[in-house]
Image (cartoon, rainbow, N blue to C red; front, side, top):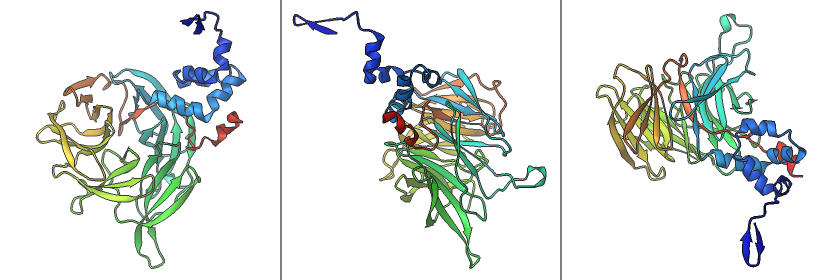
Length: 388
């Protein structure tokens, strides 16, 4: 627009060169383009390559895609990861295969945030018969499904028994931290539960010493690392002392590495799940006998006070096992042995997705997902050359 005689008139002679010369405008336009297209557009010119690789653009693009997350589904735990992107109506838009993971055991997808996912698997024992695995350790990798980048974390401290992990992402930066709970053996032969932390800023593990609580394993999470990340904190269930299959409390740790426990409502069940519902830590408790689902919300984790959001009849039989539960905005996504279902907590409606025959299932999981250009190492330093 140009000003003529006090009036704004549209300038019809504005060229694409004028748009390119104003990088803010070009960045705004390109930030709305799918990542797969951006990967192609990098070769258009040196300007586009530099812009798309710049840290500011990567953050801008992420801010756009975070407004409309989709789902990423991993239906069949296997050595090769076939991931499916799905809109909430049940439309599969893309299948992604992460291939650069050969000679490993079956992988489990445990979280998704800002376009990155974390995958774990038991390491194979060298020179073992029948591909035996080490049940006291995980191989951990951070992947970007859209760019197909894979980053292997270094090996952690040895553990005497099973371990558990969780991943936290700093909302204001691209840093992430991986929390690893393990059982160490000391010279006195005593075994202690400890925690160590991998930071993407340092690229190494650092121990924080003995801790009191160990995250519980789950039948619906074969590798025992079910957790949820909400508003800068990671949450796990801690099992009851008298019943290792039922949650007794919640263990939380924030990005500043502060640990604490949170009490649970009395009506928690063996089939309970922690989810991020509209930005709040929420508990989904499935009561098999009554065929009822209770959804509880914790508005303020600093002053734990659970409030029941809704109590609804299930849209599936009590004979079905609930394999996994996740949430996106105001909807809760249930995966059972027979169905894929979404419950909208605002409208109180169930929607069955036509996915049961789409793919085979083996410990299926799903998470909210947004495409991004974030590097798996968690640092944008490799892009700084674009700002020179």
